[in-house]
View 1 (cartoon, helix red, strand yellow):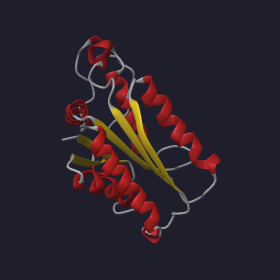
View 2 (cartoon, rainbow, N blue to C red):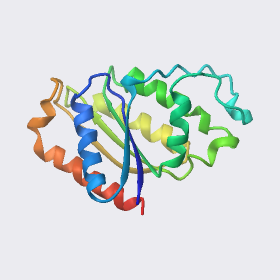
View 3 (cartoon, rainbow, N blue to C red):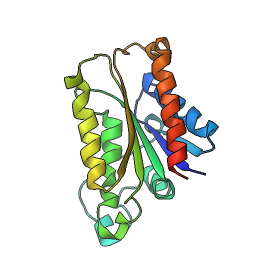
Length: 187
């Protein structure tokens, strides 16, 4: 059974990002995966200040909700990162979360992330590739640097209004199929 950690990086509860990720989760669950969803908007995750305690094998110096997420990341086989596009990048919530992956950059913790699969779900109000491409490249570079393997990307444009993605059932079905595929990759 695949162990998937799905991370929703939108501050908007029940918004397009959460709906898209939920369709992926639904597909993965239907295919037998064990899935846990984390909503970053409900957590307190502080910024990384580059103290490098984690690089020396010590716990992260920040006392926040990320302390409880590190073991979940380590235990997962696949991580789904979901974010809307804010100013040509991920949300501040998602960026702070990814910044804290520096924990896995040092040799003491690298084995906890190396080889994991990662899928990316991006939504945006616009439809132009030049608007969403930097977000996808951000994930490709960051996760590649951590030696994680790509497991799929879905980008849905034209969905700025809350719930607008519900008017695109073919894209939601695509997300569902991606979730099924992710479940199969974890086996």
